[in-house]
Image 1: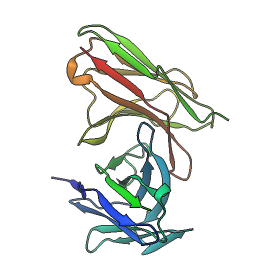
Image 2: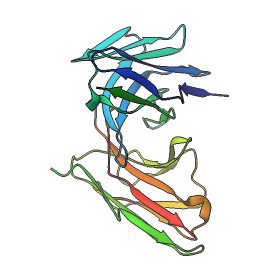
Image 3: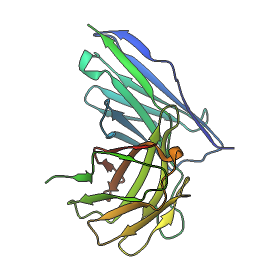
Image 4: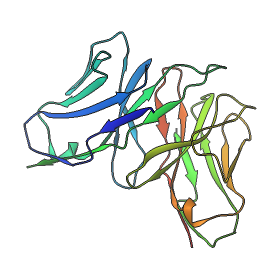
Length: 116
Length: 111
């Protein structure tokens, strides 16, 4: 069966360090992968998208890698700040279904806590 | 530009009652989605609408119906609410670059 796995345990790190979150998947051939941030009581907010033929994507302090051989994406936040504390979700898109629909499947998310 | 709006923000229903969750977007997006989010389960797709006039089932459609009223509005209806439908419901729309924009959510409790 298809699975998307994100670490269910919270990641605790000190301010200034690099946070690394993992998204592993099985039995998918995603066309691309996305990362979202979700704060308590709010809807997810899109951060980055990486395609299957891209190895790495960067945006400011964020970096995403995508290894289709390992079936894994890593999400890095450099120089982390307490304001980065949130839950981070990965979402896989396996490509367009008939009619051109985009159907994402989300992981359960990993909570990041950055301590001052 | 309000993005994606949802009403109501909170709702308590009794088992068997019906209600409609409203969603609207002002970004002129073709595709819209309804998800539910439960503790430990992540976001699960209920229904989606690839364009005005079309709707399709997602992963967990049982007990729900949807209407794509026009390009802006996509509503989710619970005909006979059950306690298992207690959840947080999110509506989203998608831009041409495949970025999804989510609403603030509706917190529904079914007693």
